[in-house]
Length: 112
Length: 140
Image (cartoon, rainbow over all chains, first blue to last red; front, side):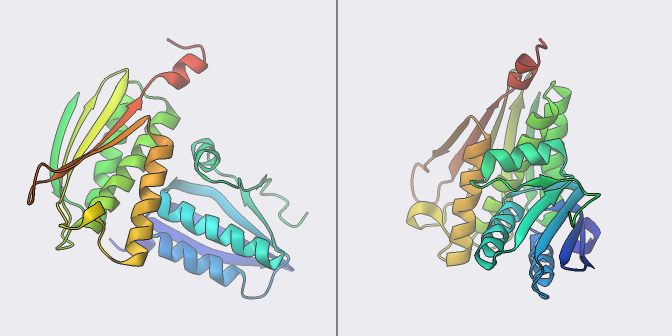
């Protein structure tokens, strides 16, 4: 079973907003796909990046590390970053582990 | 409930074993978050064993003891022959440190019992107290 079976991610662009859609499990064996997708989201220098976590069912240290680095890169480039729809357990995990908690937003209005 | 598992830490087995431990914790009454934390911590441990394995096959011997009150997971670690037990690759060493950080943030106790001598295995032991969330929610 390849990593695509466990994790799918792609970027939707809405004007100056890049929406990163993530579906599946982010672990040591799939997190490189997430890293590539996050890098692709910055390709057109968006004003905002929204990561849609509503269909993420698992994330481990590899995924958290990529999120942490991406958050730092967005901050350095002045890009607003937020997370949408994380499951309660994942949100609690992020709050437990990450120094800087990502703002969580309503998925229905990513450009607002 | 007691479990003893011997397996190779390939991606499919890592996923199966971390979900098995999470399911066992659930059977013992762990809350959603406790179950999730155990799955994350066990996954980190197994990735660690894979990184530490000299031959990269990542043979793992894991035992677990679960009750309504706590979950104890012990893993025999290979003797890498290097102080600190790290594989000597910057990226892998950073991954090992980050993995231990995650485990330490999530579990109540983390202990590495060093090997008794050359060629012996050390033991990584994790403990998660269960039921704190139940008590916080007013459940018994």
